Amino acid sequence: CRPPWLRIRARLEKGKKGGKKKAVDPFTKKDWYDIKAPSMFSVRNIGKTLVSRTAGTKIASDGLKGRIFEVSLADLNNDEDQSFRKMKLKCEDVQGKNVLTNFAGMDFTTDKIRSLVRKWFSLIECFVDVKTTDGYTLRVFCIGFTKRRVDMAKRTCYAQSAQIRKIRAKMVEIITRECTTCDLKELVLKFIPEVIGKEIEKSCSGIYPLQNVYIRKVKILKAPKFDLTKLMEVHGDYSGEEVGTKMERPAEEAAPAAEAAEEA
Image (cartoon, rainbow, N blue to C red; front, side, top):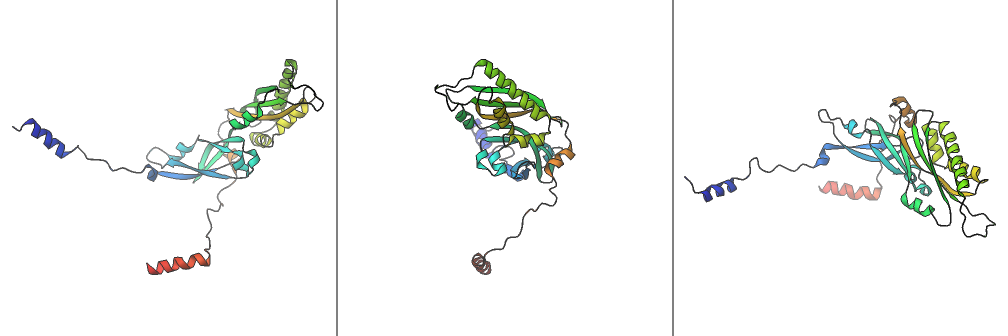
């Protein structure tokens, strides 16, 4: 019978059962997909996203559907003045290597909200639940601030509580009217140039002058059943899309490359 110390040494020399597993890079099992924005934005190709390849019962497209992408409106419309708006786009369908998205919400950047809030002015906020003509239920948040009149001598320009209630009622009325008479695509096109905010400013000038009136946030509470034909209306056809074109190299660059190839 071998002594215990010899048995322990033999076990250590032998090593663990099965040996060390070879490290596999997880990115070798993943694919890149192009994220496509709806036609209401000028830039359609907004980036790429990763997903694990189809393996067994786990399908790649199922891993992509429902993903939310948050994109700055400045990138979507090539306009730096709109950088304070964040658009949420939700993956609705996957076609080939294209991820088709639809509008899923809107928000303001924190720094923009902070820059609007100032002392000596009244802040007026409201929110309203509306239903579009194509069946989307949205919660729309509005923000506005009182404005100093030209002939005002007073340092502060606070609105009275009765005036604030009237302004808030007017906000709710205008938002409801503008949102319930159009579909989601038309509504997003109203949000981008701030049509509703300007309309509220104009209507409330008789109660108390307002400034910086914005639709600051939009949430989708309830969406209708997924309809591919409606999604394709928003996106159009990507079948004839150019993936890439052959580029001609300048003569100065081509010559050293040819010499290197000959030497090899």
